[in-house]
Amino acid sequence: MNPLAAELNELLAQHSPHVLEMLSDLGKNLFFPKGILTQSAEAKEKAHKYNATIGIATEKGGPMFLQCIQDKLSAFDPKDIYPYAPPAGKPELRSLWREKMLRENPSMAGKHFSNPVVTNALTHGLSIVGDMFVGVGDHVVLPDMLWGNYNLTFSTCNGGIVKKFPTFTESGGYDVEAFKAVLKNTAEEKGKAVVLLNFPNNPSGYTPTVAEGDAIVAAILEVAQGGCNVVAITDDAYFGLFYEDSLKESLFGKLSNLHPRILAIKLDGATKEEFVWGFRTGFITFADGNDYENTPVMTALEKKTMGIIRAKISNCPHPSQTFVIEALRSPKFLEQKEEKFQVMKGRALKTKQVLDSGKYDSAWSYYPFNSGYFMCLKLNKVDAETLRVHLLDKYGVGAISIGKTDLRIAFSCIAEENIEELFDLIYKAVQDLA
Image (tube, rainbow, N blue to C red; front, side, top):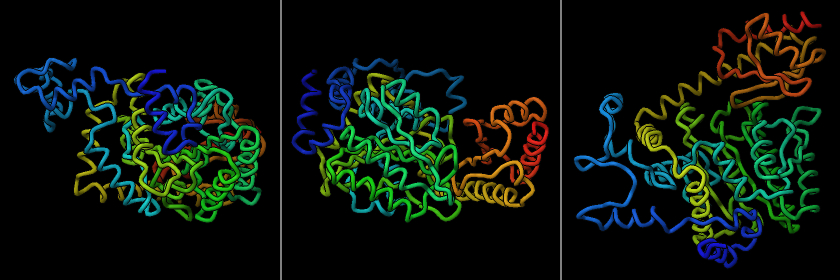
């Protein structure tokens, strides 16, 4: 083991030994090297004559660039576009995102958590969590309605075992008891559980009520008190898109500093929250179980995160970080974001209104949804994949089939005035097949 990794592990052993136990073998071996980047950082401060350290080309006191590119980006200073960004992300962006999280999540007030580290969007954050905390045979607790990429990330890449529970009860609420049962089984079998909480959920578009959220947190606390180490991840990709009765903030706040055996990890990003999917700008934030500021633990986790970023992608794109900073600082940001939220809410409520008309009841029912981008139909008679292909071939309509019965509809990309026609066409396609 590299001495720098051993040093970080010793910090964890002294200040939060359960977090050290949670790390995968790879996680224990991670460190941030004192190599080119460290030497370049020192040179940036002290090399007032010549700085011949970092691998970029310079010209006239700034980064070299092609004018044909700069002409398209003339609103931005070349120094904020072309050089490498710091491995943990631009400090100003990290600070602004931290302020945003506190503003939007009242339960985080007074809690102790790390500064967000910039990731190459949320999927990259999931990969980091998998590398650091999911070892071969570790159990990852997930609902049966899940984003398929979790399997690729945690099972295929990291060797974890996905343990599913039914997402909904028969009455249509979040099945907290089923979650609790799978979590308890994992706790008893492994002594460690990786719990992934994705709200608003993809594919169902459901966010738990406040009571359901409290029950989820209580279940995690119960197994931690029983001696199980829990890595509790909140995948907040669609954060803020809460349309009806539900939680209006991340469970990260309630999970932070809750118990020494609980490590809370928040994954979020500008990607969907600010409608900038192609920017690929996300964040990972840690909170351990201590109710005091545990700087050594946050330092160790941040350096291990920087180590895996350095190893896999070196650093995250600089231009998109600059663009997000400009958006967060804009006086029009909140107003414009609210305008788009209302558009999305209108589409969700229109979808529910159309589905509640009763005219499709012979063809399908639908799973509860109150947030996010999606909803799912539960087909009564026809196979979901057969229907998906028929919809494409005959009606030019695209949807996603999930298993035998479920068809995911992204109302996020359908104008409100077109939603009823969309479901009319799906209904026609069902009738064709039935």
